[in-house]
Image (cartoon, rainbow over all chains, first blue to last red; front, side):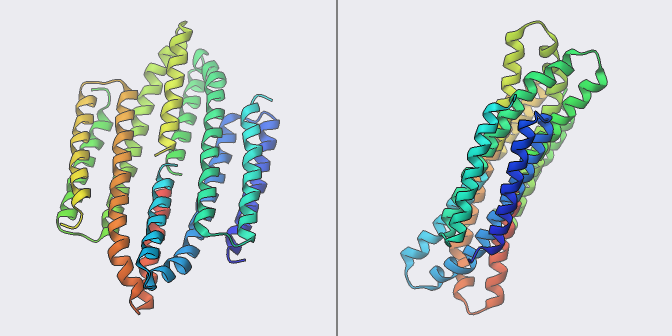
Length: 89
Length: 89
Length: 89
Length: 89
């Protein structure tokens, strides 16, 4: 599996989310719940960065070094879309 | 449970995360993985808004309507902290 | 002027933006431009927090301590809207 | 100037910021001020996307197509840094 580090971190996030579910079941203090959700979101940002890193070092390098100008354009536009979408989060 | 809607949405997020784990196991295209992570983060934003809504309508109203100025200040500062922390995500 | 600190910081942001305009005029390195834009955005987050702080300590306290349930609801919903809108930035 | 579109948009942002300064001088309603700040931040996101677009289509393509592996690595790491920094905003 190429995304090994991302996978392990995502497993941790899954456990974290189950922890937040228990907090909600036990009517935990809202602010504590919000802080745990923020911690999950920070972890997901980190996972996104790992996946993007992998992507830049594989697909993006291949596409840009190929002579296929259309494929190159497609790959660069995908990165811009992802960048804009993350800004809107 | 007071956070009923938040709880149900969080259960959905948990399933969504397991789906992303499977994508990583199957070496899915990086950009598709990033888009799924963005969808999870949008869902978490919505859950945070639900929890904050509940918080404003219960603890914040009680604290502000009480005569305990210190408690009122504590509750307002918590909201500002949460607001600043979410901006940094 | 009630927003004194916010006003002074915004004046600084205005100067910062003129600095970025000059960078663009001089064809500065893109990454340096992006970092300056990020610095401006961090400054704007801080200004938003100052304005929200002022708002919570004046309008929100008055509305919640009044007996006008509709006004109270309006003020809380405005905060939720602002919170959701900032998450989408 | 290579960043023509970004420059024009930044000039608009500068005018928008002066408008918000006037709102603060006139003690405008806090929530209206916050909404205008959000509009400025959305405009800055768009400008960042334009600058990144330019960067990907010039420096990044050159660096990746060159045989200088170190320069290639430097350019990819810069993009990752920018991506992580924007997530933290």
